Length: 489
Image (cartoon, rainbow, N blue to C red; front, side, top):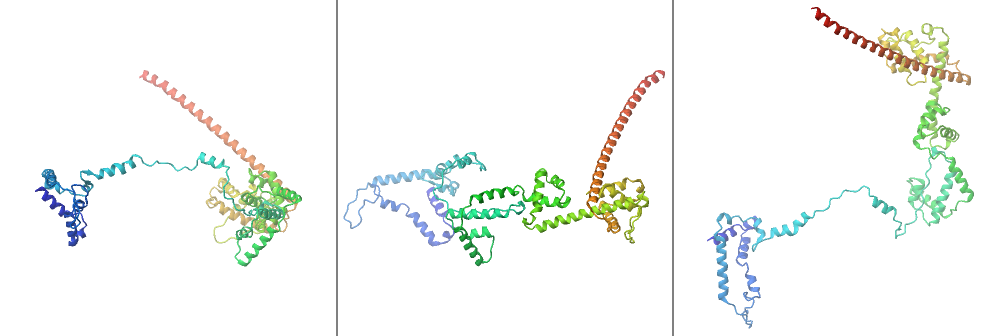
């Protein structure tokens, strides 16, 4: 029957592991457990239908009477219900014994119960998705307006040493007062210095014995410290006003660079480079204090050497400019008559001609040696000059190559006038006036060139308008003549 087939399928599809199927002892235990299924409940049951009330042999107790007819009737009804249930099932339906059917027991699907009671509430009420807040106004004002103090008192700490920047030119006596004030603050709070305070005060010290000595010295300074007097407080305020705390490290480095570029006495040029961060009065005051107290600055020898090297270059350029002026003043027409007493040595390689050298010297004197773009201007003059229209070698020289040749020619002039040139005050004043005149002439020349360009543009626009009007008149004349020719034909 179907029930026998069901028992056969259940036994054949025992849900034990493969290892248990291969083990005969496990198979026997599994089969015995199926046969004895429910027997323990029958014996332990205390109901009237159970056998718990049956007296054990030799106990002398009488159990409750059991109605065998009623028990047999229930068994028959149970058998009929099972037969009716499995008569409709075929072999294919009985073989659908899989993992999902294991959740069904006594007609109740426990899988649906798990889905309903455990999983569904989690899906219906998912967790709230929140963005990570980088800034919260409520939390900010909550912390700001929270005036409550912590219940645990904070331990006293030693004040950190005052940071001194040497380029700010603060008096060294001010550092002594700051240190005295720091020791007195530590003494008032009852603080005892540690090794961390030694590192903050004296820096990294590798020797342990020296560290201990510094620590003892620090403790002694704290124990013997005294508050600042009224006179010392006044001196502290005066010395604080003498420093330049508004000058940062970047502005100081720029001041050093510009001082070397224009010279230490060119205050206006230095102020133009430092504007708008610093005014002319601020630069003048700092420059005066800098050169008066340069020894206070850390590594001042390095900065002084940088400025002096740049000033030496400026001095050499001025001497070359003076030598070039004297050389050109010896000739009425230097472009054709100028000759060098110590000309550069000529090798077998292609060199510059005398005309080319004279033209380079003339252009250098025209624009001035102190300009950064002087050799770019010389190159443009060479390309615009009709005398060198067919000199492709000279026209193709780059500013770097022209600078190399110009330096060689200027060195030749230095040999010729080196002994006779003295940069006294009169010479410096004259050279300064020449520089101002040269600058004025260059500005006038630039304005004249711009005006000429505007005039040329105006002439070109007028010419274009005239051509347009003439073209329109010609078109009208042709249009008028066409009908006449058609009528004559």
